[in-house]
Length: 283
Image 1 (cartoon, rainbow, N blue to C red):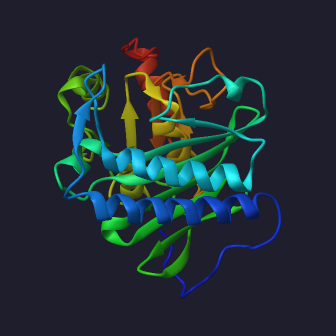
Image 2 (cartoon, helix red, strand yellow):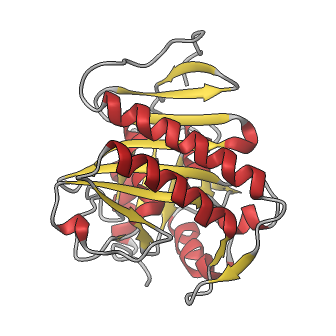
């Protein structure tokens, strides 16, 4: 990562400037709401066994209110609201995860963030990640650039491309154990560090702590959209396990696994999964 420059602000005009400003403000406000509720938020479990809290719902309401007010004709796909199919009838869809890393949030830990992405005609074109526990946010628009805000100081982000460091970032939950085992089999020389939120995993790549994040399970669009956009905007690469572009206009909203990296040999990593017969994710 290049050395930060003091208060270098992103452009305020041009394509998606208003969308970026609204998304940044919405993510910041939702993160503050969630942080204030973290110690008291009641937890329950969804039918699939994943947790949800009062903080998720409160953050979701704040984000949806801001987006609907600013962009009433756009669709919204959120983790916390059933998919109403609107995203199939319009070209623009906001994809949000009000708290990515709910298990960590519910446990009172810091590895969670607010994620807001925008897809136009199926392509991820904007992403905002906000980690209130660390007073940190990342955002980006592929083709325009990426930025980090740390304690109020904004700096541009551009990833150095490399392949000499071999560090893999992955989750550690029991439900992903088989998928993580597959990744480790394909990339045995990579040291492993663990994070739970996809956004925080991308933050570790942006910080230079890790080279890549590979996920061999199907993954929801709200987990992948904003992190993918930020990573690409910063100069990284985001694909599915077969090396294809991640998109939101597939048969359902899920992504067929993913590989996020800052490596010049990203295509070789994809080829290693193909050689191992892992081009389609676990369920």
